[in-house]
Length: 342
Ligand SMILES: NC(=O)C1=CN([C@@H]2O[C@H](COP(=O)(O)OP(=O)(O)OC[C@H]3O[C@@H](n4cnc5c(N)ncnc54)[C@H](OP(=O)(O)O)[C@@H]3O)[C@@H](O)[C@H]2O)C=CC1
Ligand SMILES: CC(=O)N[C@@H](CCC(=O)OP(=O)(O)O)C(=O)O
Image (cartoon, rainbow, N blue to C red; front, side, top):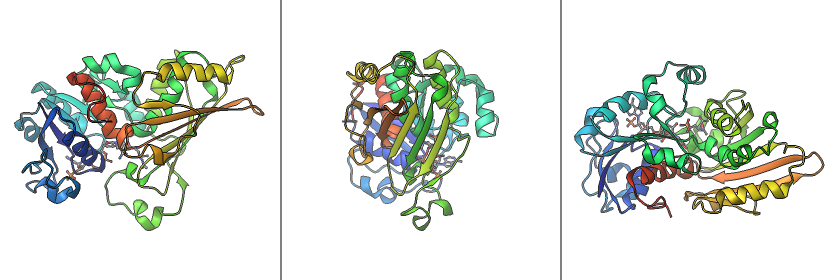
């Protein structure tokens, strides 16, 4: 059994991590943190885990790096607001733990891009070069060897999985890409904010974060890497009246002479052996992926405009957060990649 700690375990993605790791089979949950609930039994705050053998008589501890180190865990999952993970990472790494961070703190390679998009100086810029970007389908070998993995953002995962193979294959006009995404409200986290009250979100759809949502930084970083040239895109996120799920529509021009059949062949080849990406003809629907670690993808060509339309759907809390983090952990710790996720 490998001992793990979950930091920020009472948040939405932390709770999802607790559920996935409780049924993983190869790990022991050695510690969970929450400042608000320190000292309380896990089952009293996360009722769906009450009585689960993996939770035992575990109580939340306070959320400092020392509290995490004291658990004796070999791996720490950080499910904290961005800005904080950078403060935890250094002491935990120095104490010999390996880290899977769900926040944005280690997803960017350059500290000045972090400053530009997050409006604050990076707290541990020296660690950026050591972090692996956590999408296994793109960076599997790097993740296996890493001590610090930055699990990719929820929107970025749904955008990068369809586009990266096509950019690697040189099939897309790089300045033609525009993306429209819709996310369930849990994407905003379990925080009290009027904008996310039921009465504000229910039966309504609205765009937000325009024109420079902070996820553009990691999306463009990864697209640029895949294309081998600078890629800049338009990205319009929406808040959708559902609890979980992301649906993404990507518009792009195929390069001269690139057919839909060639695009489909590239995506089929890229994902034929990937357990969590399902490329096919069926148009993705969030209800088919919610509660799973799948990302469903389809492609269509609008013959009238020559525009390629890529569609993708995932659960923001699973493939977009906790599931992807466990997938990365499995690679780092030498478990089968799918363990606890199917
Ligand atoms: N929700 C989603 O769909 C996704 C989220 N993410 C990222 O994962 C991270 C967690 O997100 P999410 O689960 O939504 O967030 P939540 O707001 O639901 O949870 C945040 C957690 O962090 C803890 N926390 C907050 N402030 C501090 C602090 N100063 N010190 C220690 N602990 C603190 C909270 O517990 P307490 O206050 O009790 O200490 C809570 O457990 C974020 O970085 C987010 O951007 C990534 C992909 C998708
Ligand atoms: C609906 C909603 O508010 N979504 C969040 C998603 C961000 C998220 O979870 O952030 P990271 O992936 O960067 O950690 C947002 O747009 O800010």
